Image 1 (cartoon, rainbow, N blue to C red):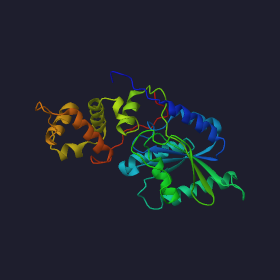
Image 2 (image 1 turned 60 degrees about the horizontal axis):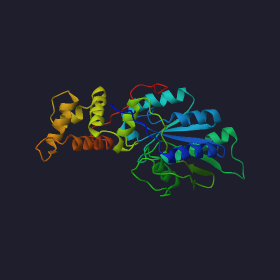
Image 3 (image 1 turned 120 degrees about the vertical axis):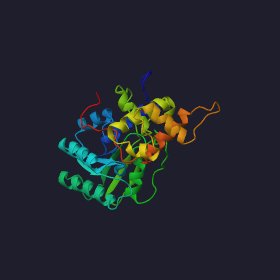
Image 4 (image 1 turned 90 degrees about the vertical axis):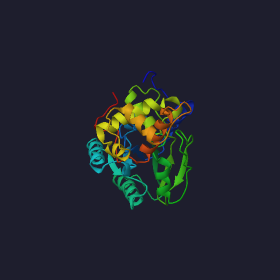
Length: 283
């Protein structure tokens, strides 16, 4: 990218302070990651805070229905080697609610967290648009938190009762202030975790096509009968075949880019992961 992506609104700084304060009040951390980008959707600022607190953590690899099973199992193993409890989740999968609650209770029993007077207090964290509100609604069994397709939607803490034993502390989704790795920044933008307005859509779509090429974009090529392997030519052909022509009778690349990214998010081009390699840093 010609301009470096940095995105850290003021309310996110306040949210980080809120997480630090409430971490002291809770027993277990439930961290939700996007299965399509398990490292890119992991906030290193929060990771450092949790590590210092020595709280037990459960990682949810969410939206797993959009990723090939062999890829997500690699990431599950990666995080387990690092000492985490890991659950592969999507809100449409049966018995996920019971599995999450079982793991929370299991940790509580081992650590002797709960006594007859107190509830198990779970801090739920995740970057914007990772599916945090949907997971909480699944756990509660009803709509308890508002769900909006807008990064940074939840700005204040919400304490939600799951059952007679467990309370959830729903934290605002926050990003880190300096996205030094621009690949990470682009992946977050593709997954709608950064506002689209701050990034050029065409550049983002070209990056996505490059990533799809290293994984599997055959479904896109076959669907639109595209033979080129050049990302720009693929985008142009995609726009032409979808009828995205502007007033000057040229292909509307911006519109084509927006639709391409939107349909990737919806899984219309197959189960494609963005974070392929398992690694422990964002450098």
